[in-house]
Length: 235
Image (cartoon, rainbow, N blue to C red; front, side, top):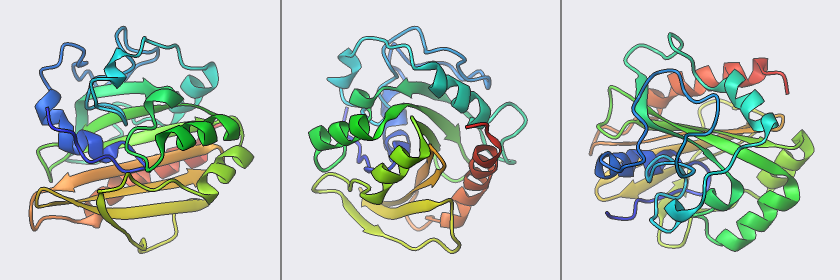
């Protein structure tokens, strides 16, 4: 299995690049449109359904996410009937402890230290099928102990690993209290990955598109849905 490009801000592109190659993995979770209310009964997530789709990360034992993580992700993650037209639930979803959420950053050990020091409690990743690409999109919901810690982390948001072809982009309108967006190029495809913060929640949306079909507008329905739910969540 080839190593997908993984941005530092969301595991979104990992799903977009890796899910087709990993769909036969024995720890893949079938799509059921309901999402987990508890961690999947397997490793922390299928190969393409987390920030670290590499084999070494798959060896990590299952972990129960803190209640604060499940409480918030249950409020923010899309539910049946909420997805925009043309979107659906993909095969993969997983909770991501800190040690799984660091692959693809420029300095994984330093990122793990920052996550721990600023109070990241855990996160959630979900594949979403879209009308725009075979790999679909992914959404992430990361939860910090408090808004101050999430802000401290976002103030110096880690960049992607060396060798990742990307450029920072300006969003057409402000998003959240802080935001960071990039355009990534890999294997002739262009992808977008956007992260933003609402209080102690950091959200991410991303997708890779077929050549010549890249569109930031195509991600806007998912961005709007997550942002509305995050603003309404009891933090």
